[in-house]
Amino acid sequence: MKDRFYITTAIDYVNAKPHVGHAVEKIQADVLARWHRDVLKDDTYFLTGSDDNSLKNVQSAKKAGKPTEEFISENANSFQSLKELLNLSYDQFILTTEKRHFDGAQKFWSAFKKEDVYKKNYQGLYCVGCEEFKMEKDLIDGKKCPEHMTQCEVVDEENYFFKLSNYQKQLEKLIESDEIKVIPQHRKNEMLSFVKQGLEDFSISRSVKRAENWGVPVPGDEEQIMYVWVDALSNYITALDYFNEGELYKKYWLENENRVHVIGKGILRFHAIYWPAMLLSANVLVPTKILSHEYLTINGQKVSKTLGNIINPEEVVEKFGIDGARYVLLTSLPSLKDGDITWGRMTEKYNADLANGLGNLISRVIKLGEKLKTQPLKENPASVEVGKLLDEFQIDRALEYIWTFVREANKFIEDNKPWELAKNDEAKFGEVMEKLVQDLYLISELLVPFLPETAEKIKKALETKQIEPLFQRIK
Ligand SMILES: [Zn+2]
Image (tube, rainbow, N blue to C red; front, side, top):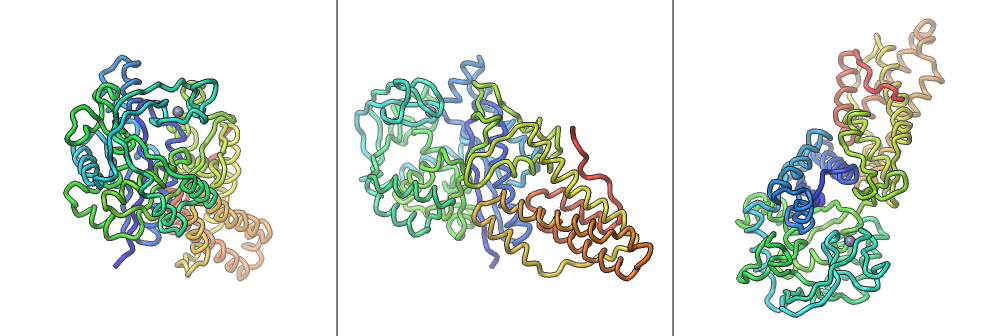
């Protein structure tokens, strides 16, 4: 049987159109999906979607003066249009307003062990931006959320609570033993120390009034709406038809060893702690891997609507093309720390690595190659190394590694000057060209998950011995 691989991205709030920060996560997940599907030939399923049930959406719709549903559906459409824009290969886009999601989320809630859920009166400070209750000690300037710089709401109401403390030992063991493998390591350590501090129960519902009657109703209680994170997280299984325990659910959740979530560091706690605890309570398998990425900043600042420094994915594609955009965004986000983008640096990177680096290599090899012999690619250890880096969620380093071959091949051309060999040493010319053609095959093979169209064009160029310029210098 083929290995199976199920990969998901975070589902974004659709209170605005997507920016580069959203885009880069989807491209990262796409690279892993393509690697498993197209290179390893695993039976792969790739899910993304939108979080429609957030209160943030309702408030933003009000501000925009539009009915919530219309507003959400417009923004969800722009998230869906990323598929074509960035050549994403996902299999499904789930909207959490869909009936199958409501049904699945309610089934999930109803499956929680009775002793894990209780009702109590609660007072707390809530950040709608985070959709999270905050501890007073974590706030700044009085009651402001440090992530959103907005005042937290004082909430005083009766809600359902989830007894997270019941799962403390189990979660510690699952994370410690890598049964739920959290990558990178320092994020794993962070989660472990959070668990070891002692877990506090968390609220899993809100009043219909506070929820503005938006979201998934709590089964059997008309007064309460599910806390948005509870329903949002369950999208990873409701999309697979958890409600009917359908084919997709069996195939990719139950009978599959690779249940992988790609998410940003800001929501790691929800994925590594709350989500597995609820799954355990509902007697459902937990994810096997959680890949946490850092953030993109723009000119040194957090990407933010309020700061007005947003770069849209459309603009990046317009300037660099689809594969160019994928490349500059992927290489801008290091695996272990935040990455900063500016138009200047993206242009430099594009020119150096794509126009001058890869583009130049391809055109030199093809132009010299009236005598090219195309060679099938032999076993290559390079793809083993790329695979290792991708397993460790080091996409930037995988690309750096591939670019060592691009640079070496360009240097090999300069050192051997095949245009001179062509005139005075035909045998040597043949050898040099054979190696270069092999190098290009190797590079095209390695690029399949990252720059899928480029990989295809290189192979075609090697076969037809014709090339249109792939990347042109940009000012
Ligand atoms: Zn916040």
